[in-house]
Amino acid sequence: MADLESRYESPTTASNDLPHDPGAPYIESGRRVESDHAWPWIRAGWGYFRRQPALWALLTLIFGAFLLGLKYVPVIGPLATILLVPVLAGGLILGCQTMDRGGELELAHLFAGFRRNTGQLVLVGLIGFALTFAVMIPAVVLMGPSVFMGVMGGAATAAVGIAGVLGLLIALALFVPVNMALWFAPALVMLQNQSAPRAIAESFKGCLKNIVPFLIYGIVLFVLALIASIPFGLGWLVLGPVVLGSVYAAYRDIYVPAP
Image (cartoon, rainbow, N blue to C red; front, side, top):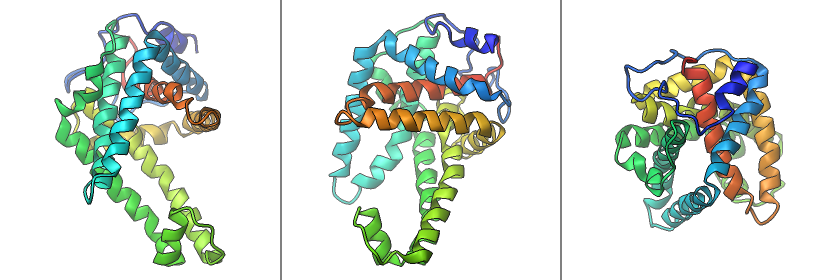
């Protein structure tokens, strides 16, 4: 535990051992870590945020506004939103790596994914969309398309029935491996130059090896998300960057050999 704390104690310290290309140090499929690593990941995310809080908040606002604006673009808007989330997230994770190496976060980091590995980052979003669509099929089949669309639109309906509830539970259960497959994928594409299919496979393997710390991590983030949503969602200006920073910290802990 002491070794883990020392890795994240000061994000301002340069860490030139971090991977940046396919030849850099890398643990294939990730390593297994102890369950007490979950909280230091979140603490590290907070450390990145507090170094440049104003810029992080601005980047979060731009990120949200960009995605919200895309949703109103006819026909292609919603799909473009799904495809571009990994591109924007990959750029901000690169920003975390820059900070970890002693550099400064910049506004340009948000759009770094449009200059590097863009195709593979978009492909991560496309595969994520396909996987999400696939896991929703049981709910659609058991509920029926009309009832399913009503539930997805927020309409409470008594027509869901036992089969519909079962379908939703199956879909929610299947979302877990989908999230495992996508969690580290933008980081692996951006920082390791991996292809989207390999990054998704590696992300799933790394999460599977660390299912207990990720369960704890997920519970803590869920509680923090509820708190962040209370004051009109303004807490996400802090929690959003902290989550991104924690993703980078977990990636570094699991996939990068300790110096």
